[in-house]
Image (cartoon, rainbow, N blue to C red):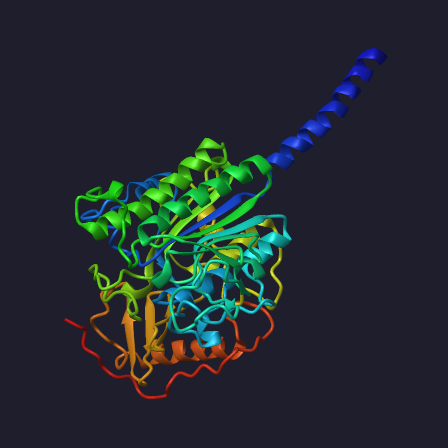
Length: 460
């Protein structure tokens, strides 16, 4: 090769190196993360989870086709507030004694110093937004009558979403006042209940439009109202479900999900966006066999939820995962995705499900999972076994592989299993965490009764 040819070759290589580096950087760009949380959507409602469902959820079904459907996903609790605490902090809500739900003007239950998935991602270059139902408390100014369900326009609140890592907040505090719209830390509008979801949908789409123009990764937490009460679908959704007004309301929640997916497509963001759609607990007052009970129950119908994930190029389309996971796992999963380490004092009960998403998991990612009801009942699930510690001291043991309906309490015949799970539960309580790391302190004492296993017959 001549000296001239060698020179040209060297120059070519020098020019190629930055291009290769650029391509590598682009391919390694952190993904956008969209977490859509429907309210009270039951496991048996989307047709992708139950072929004979009476409802229509075409966009959730679309996610099942384009991504992964989890069959054994669980909310941290069987009602709204504690589940949302678990989603954002990666910590079991029983550790702060939160079993029930907050009211419109309840004080905040997440202190400013507690790391949330939003503040964690923000530390690592993400723009963050919460658009929808907050339900985790705020501190309101003196203009607010805290015995009511509405605050005047202009009323201000602190220690809400914007104090916990969200750059943007647009939404409402509680299902009883979905028309009281808060932006950032101020009440900006009073709209009718029917107008709320269209207003929030517009805000979510505007947010995606803005981030597409601005560039950089973003985290959108979108907690919707449907199908929780009030059941207020706008006229354009009348009859869409072919069932009833409740079905139309659920259909609207599904439609909003589809609008978000379409917006990502429109801006060319789909390829690098992780989308999760799930529910905060089971359906309210609606039982879907074979699961026992519904929202508020410690049984499977209270906390086993639909969980759908789309992530092109990473999650294989049309796949199904049967591993047990928890909504708490969002935080640890985000950390592994962006290659960042969580501090020891955060996400104590969050486990990364990235191996599940990528199809590389060789074993269950979770050692065990804790469930809770608003009555104060607790349960621990490990493998096929589920041990329930009722507040009144009774205990029930079920093998979910052979008895998913939880009809045959076999605690008395399996004392060794009861003891083994009780020991594990006590360790999780004593350690202040269920993941590896230094011992942490629970905010409140957690007790499980020593009373012997009892027998409760299934409700008819």
